[in-house]
Image (cartoon, rainbow, N blue to C red; front, side, top):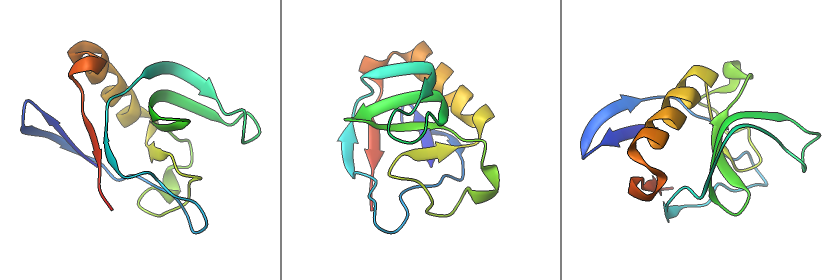
Amino acid sequence: MLVAVDGAAYATWPVSTARRGYRTPTGTYRPYSLQRMHYSKLYDFTPMPYSIFFHGGYAIHGTFEVRNLGRPVSHGCIRLAPERAQSLFELIQAQGPQNTTIEISP
């Protein structure tokens, strides 16, 4: 994941996206909901710390399965290490969701 602020590179972090049989949506989005802690109703109330929802039920969020970062393992969400998800969450709060663009390319 490349994070930029005002067009300047801010950080690059490893992520996990959708595994075989699932998809991570591509396109350009704005976050519509930020939740410090969310529990997935679809997947056994799995904790999703620092959730940034951007399309339907898809979110960028922290994961405690950091050993899998860099590999496709999710049901479609974009997973980050918890401390990086917190940094991104706080950056979006500071900049404002309305001033944030999320671009996901294949």
